[in-house]
Figure 1 (cartoon, one colour):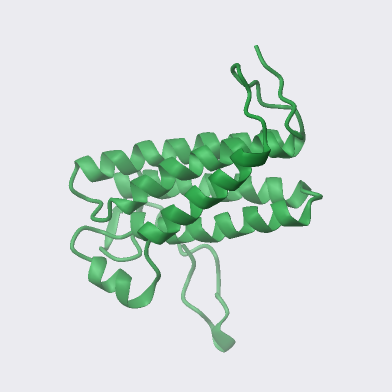
Figure 2 (cartoon, one colour):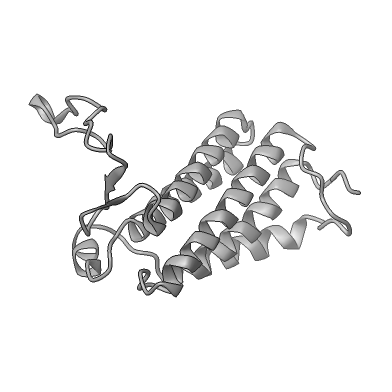
Length: 190
């Protein structure tokens, strides 16, 4: 979270000191403890976005780098949903995009396209075939963590949009295949 914009719309300081007591602000819904279900889910998404950024920064294939960037951007939409408190969805929908069935269908289409041309492993994959693939695999595990946290939110009645769960589930599948693509179809197995 950042401080209020200063002159020219710039953030005056990254350190607001408002979180020093162990609380943070949701996008909509007020302040919550830093270990709240919302912040746990958002934190996992943030970790996944960063891991995808690391993969993208090392990726030599422009098409795959663009795919990773698009997924990072979509995860910001997921994060906004997870950072919205109960009963505040109307505010979110007024100002931001939300996770839709079309987004999930887009992941399904990408998954089908990759699976049609990339041989899938017949055994467990040990990540590390390439740096990019290993980093995408790391992002996949972080998306799985975000999915588990989102399930907790949903079970607590604090996540209104079931498409968020479908999106995270499908994204982790897609990242698995992207990692195999980044390895050139050859995988280390055990």
